[in-house]
Image (cartoon, rainbow, N blue to C red; front, top):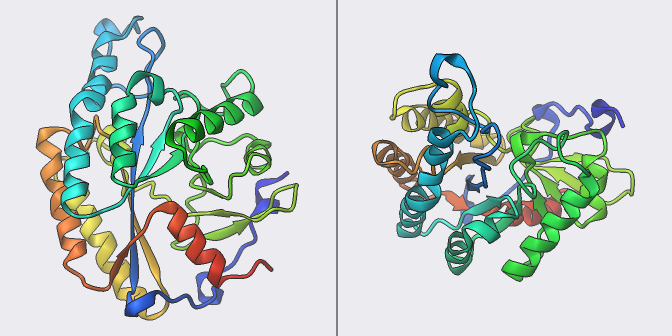
Length: 292
């Protein structure tokens, strides 16, 4: 199915007026991404270029950079969010359960929402069998967390022409792969079930800020504050969603965690902010907007 056939163009000025309880104006959605990197393969991201520009495997320094996040950085993020009573969405490769079970257990103890993020950290175009990858990931996360998984964020936000249909056939009700709006939007899938996309952030996202654009440590606060201020200003027209996506190996390091804390504190100073998980946003939107 063509991409444009899955998504109807709906200008923001024609979107239905949405409301939140208790005169709240804006939703804060925090996504923490946990992944498994194989040191024997090329790494998804690099902090150090290879000597003499010749890639070498195993890629120990770049694998270890990510491993620090899972050993140390995650716990900083957990503590930061716990202190602020922020219930996050946990996007995880299913194999995180095998390699880092303590992280998933800790997140579930805080009532975070598990979100499918692939079976391994590999684009959907590169897995051996997309159907098996999705089915296995959902079942593994379901079995470990004892929670129904209704959301999915593909590694690198990647989709083949079949991904949405396979996800829908396996009970997924929302995806985070289509950053096309400030609010959820409906997508079309072959089986006729309802599928929506949530406004996952590609610019208030530490992969883009830190690893791709290589900004200074304070950029997540500087850019995040600008993003929030403008969205908040526009809430007279409609509810807005302020989404922040973070990874332990990037924002969980000592020189960046302070700026995430400053951003969250600034946002939470506004009494009309509602903190939601992806599932809560899905349920809220579905309740207010009937499928056309």
